[in-house]
Length: 241
Image (cartoon, rainbow, N blue to C red; front, side):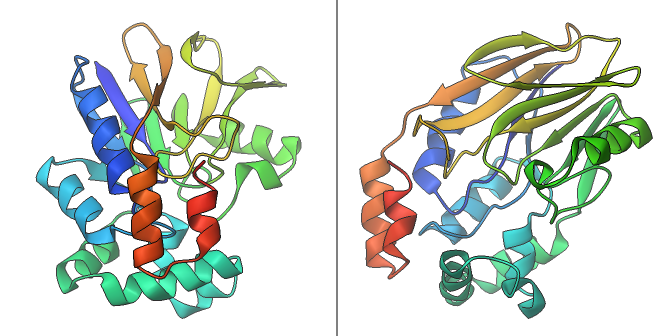
């Protein structure tokens, strides 16, 4: 079975559409989105409606949670906070209901999907914790594979016996050895934070244990224009390039 997994769309409808139509070129059995559907970007309702229309299974991210929890606003940066406050005004009742209904995590046989850290943490950045803590999380995982987002980075954390192996992920295919447990940080659709501004997502083949990282170009200028139109922070647009 081939599974497409995306994260951190951040209300970027142009990027989501481009990723979806790239996925349609592949023989994909299921599509997942692991959180931060909204925030930063200009089109939260269009993104949510698109996910619902195409039956894309989703988990909750910290920005999604902050949409209806004021306490979370105090934990995020100023641009993210301002973006959430504007997004709250843009969201329809149905969109808010959808975000509230999202689970913290999903399971698919040997696969766990969660925004932050296993088993169900939507707030913790894997990049902010120690290697010891990552090793413990891997040891305690019931599943062999865990897919996370949140950091907007592409990185692979693998545990073989007591050894933690950490490597950057790049465009192309990587084998995930059956002798190891893995946490895969899958990058961002709507706001990549690396040296490449394309939308990123991954395809995991459960039969061959191979992971393909996909880079997808999209109309960044249009998203940037809409960010300005909606009165969102200028940095939200500049960060896309």
